[in-house]
Structure formats: structure tokens, C-alpha cells
Image 1 (cartoon, rainbow, N blue to C red):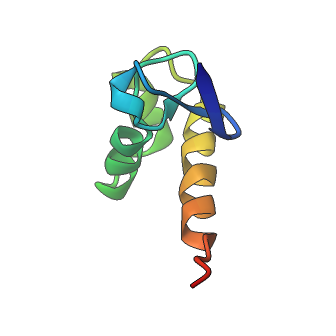
Image 2: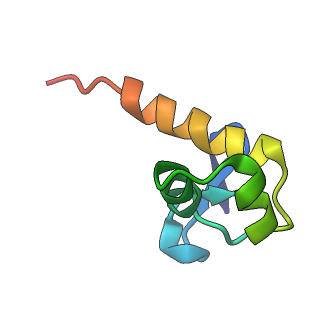
Length: 74
């Protein structure tokens, strides 16, 4: 069963060992974030991964923002 994490980001135990990925693909969010961190533009990433659309990259950034805003209660 797929677990929706954020808009366009899902996690499924039997796909990529449950790593967050772009819905409908086997592309992990961490890979796209790594490309962005290395200075690649969204257009450059789309050339590398033609199945992606700009909204997929935006979903990865939204996911990262959600993680950065996470507050743990102790």
C-alpha cells in the first residue's frame, strides 16, 4: 500500500525500500534534492529524467520544506 507523504511524494514499503519517491515513478526525492543542491536547474534535471515535470520537482521541494518545519515533541 502506498503512503502519501506530501503533494506528489509517496512511500511504499516494497518500492525503493520505502524511501520517499515521486508518485508514479521509482525516482527518490533524495536524488532530485541532491541534483538541486549540486546547482542543477529544474530544466537540467528534466533533461536527465524526461518523465519528470516541473511540478514533480516542486513536490520534492515541498517535501523538504515539510521536513524542515517538523517539530518533535519531547
